[in-house]
Image 1 (cartoon, helix red, strand yellow):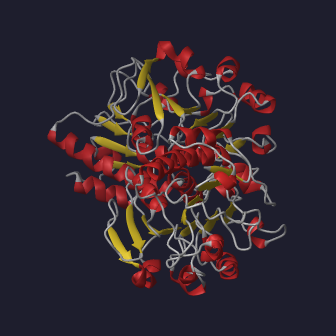
Image 2: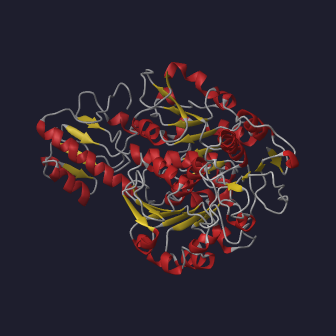
Image 3: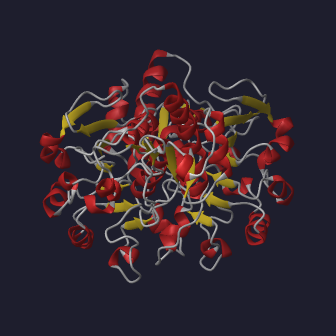
Length: 295
Length: 295
């Protein structure tokens, strides 16, 4: 196993714990790649049969993934818990007005809503969405899950298929976007969807900025069409200085930190250990990337 | 039943649903009092045998409660869910740096901690604390509960009695204060306790401002002795303009809104209905106030 572009002690330990041996790239039959970006990605010797990527969202990697080349695995599902935790934090912060209070310098009470008693739609109920549904279970909340095929999701009051998505925006109080970024999900949330949401509704995005039409969101926030937006990902990203989302009173921006570096390495090491073990045993690897699906 | 100082439609409905009849004070054998303050509280005719107060914390009412007079009941436990929900929101906001991000106008990533994997001490595991323990259950968190007598609390990894409280400050990552305000709990958290906490530790207060020594807290925040403080209650309260807590980068203040008015009336109406039913049936009422205990 080669670990690149730079070594990492916890990942080396995970490789060994899984039964592998760190090696130079030319001697390796597999590669664990720890850089989010593709620009330092090496030409692969033909001995490499498997590449483990560090991210769960892999849309920028798709051009590098060849149906006839090595198997690529993503970190899909690995970061579900920290990301879902951040999503819950953003959702509560939104509903409870915490961004407004954080900016206040005077004691001004408001009659905030509670999460209790509300309906929350989770658009894209993969690993993150399912972890979030678990975290919402002790709250008195109805969850509507939206998945590609609409197969029932445990813990959700209802599950809709992606082709029934148009209905969801008027049926929930709040919305958490956790779908992969593909051609089909670009601008999933635009002017029309924002207009359909209740005017107290918060939208949380912990997936990819491209899923929301930023200009339409800014307009909806300024018009008071929705309660607010709490975004860990933006489009463009990073969000440039001076962008209206920085100062909109009903917006809360976190700089793509739902999965902070410390938590990231901890969780990635667990996945590397398990996939190295499976690779050595000839078993199916976790989170193989399907070049056709795009994730 | 008399409803004072002013009527309220939802409470009148609750009285009727419980089997009671709204009446003038002089004709009433019980009083539902909807004002947080005592200054408009009337002299009670001797026919009044029961007074339902609207708040869960009743320390300011103690001088008005006479062992030989009518039974007073608090709203203890009624607001546990909205207050616990707010406490969880403040805890996540603290750990995830949301107050800092809310004030930012530039994309600056930090390596925030996660709630996952941490130990949370809940000081005062009454209704609010127990509701919060339930909300923490799906998170990978160890809970240390502190109760007066140290009786085991469901869902807590450990329970300490109040006389073992001195040990807790160094044994948890984060602290949620949810104890009643009594003589014994004043300045429960002072300079010594803050020094014992880990320097990444957040303290959340959803109980009463007097439980924390504000000056000691400000000093600890300025010295970086703790991660931060997220406070729904303060001492003094309201927190005056210009107070250092408004602008401390590691403080988040919400203006006593853990139980927002809309949620408050919804939950109080449920309690009034049940206590009216019990009163009519001669059963024990929920949340009787013990003049000796002070809550």
